[in-house]
Image 1: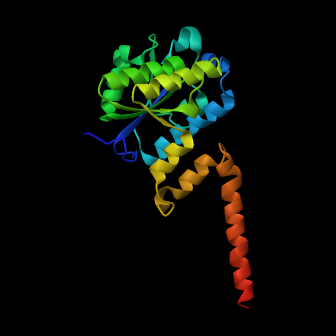
Image 2: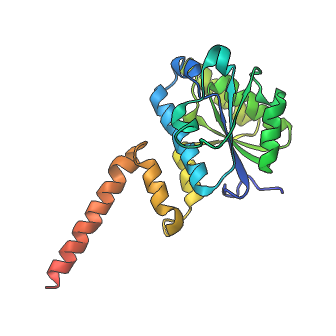
Image 3: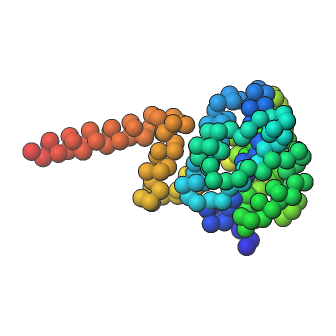
Length: 220
């Protein structure tokens, strides 16, 4: 199925690829706060689970060098998804990864990984070469310096990949706050990971509650 780059992402036409969220890579981040990057990756995983988007998890040399996939995602959010471990920086060189992506049945791929210049860029470029529509989540990626991260982002965009942020991803899936079947789930997943969830939503509910109470009292 061909999907226009100008059409909105949906859980019915896209898959999420989360690549190498491992302690070795997180400890090397200098382009952003590692906790912020991990928070954004958790937003992606939780949103994909909430909306039923197929997701692929992969690690590189988990046993011998880089450590396990972040438990905040692999254990706490997506425990039923097998993790594809590999040795290649370009995950597409690994048969298990290629088979896992093919099993999603999706041509539109949302890709996030550590580091931006390797785990994200290599796999975005390869996805495009294989005929996929590739999106990358820039605030769920990081690298050893801002320069390395920024140049990797430039290269992916020049190749035709579309940049996203984690919250943009969630809003694009939700589309309408009147979608009650996912509204509370979106609020709950954003609450621990963003100022929108921690400050803006509680304030909005407080303000609406006070206004409603004031209107009720004025009618008495």
